[in-house]
Length: 298
Image (cartoon, rainbow, N blue to C red; front, side, top):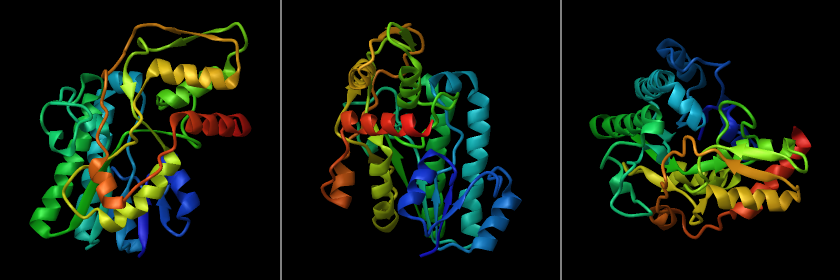
């Protein structure tokens, strides 16, 4: 099966290419996904049997808060064009990546399940981004229902690992943490956003790279399938884990600003029903591997 991957030069795309080098990886240099004519030409030239849609305008909590319009416009245009032009080109299979940021801030219970997806608004700090991911799911379901296209979605929790965006505006928590601790020297005080109390499921990128090909083959429903490990740690716990592993004599100071959603852990029950037992990488092991990679590749 010929598979085209959007977001091919992004964090996840670069890592996925190591295990699936035979797929075709598309970056923004190859095609402007906000331009429908370019997307039409892309699919006409490549003639894929399947599209794995990973491309997105992403960023950390501060970036999300300050650039809501950019997150909304760019992601809406990309998602709309990919789904519609795939249908127009007769591509039978599209698997799109959402985010647990699309789930409501307030849910009935934790870990939340797929049925909670539309049961309230996303957290305000990721509102525009979260809503564009919801609409990507809506469009996938609409083309599935009206045109009988096998378009489906999955929702990964926070992703981290080698090839991440370290020390940039697009950095998520773990990448930003690694960058700060790596550059700190003994005796430094490292400032961190928030209070350190929010809880997060951190998904090691290579785990997701193993799961995605299975989803491409087996996830053929309209469920926004949650992909997340069982482990759910506080920001403070994760910070302490990394500092201890580096052996550096540094202190971390949380500034109390922009804490974000307190918790957003999802259940992986349906995922494991589909793919079978899976040995997720622990945060302790994953952050150690990521820190080592960053130290060697900086």
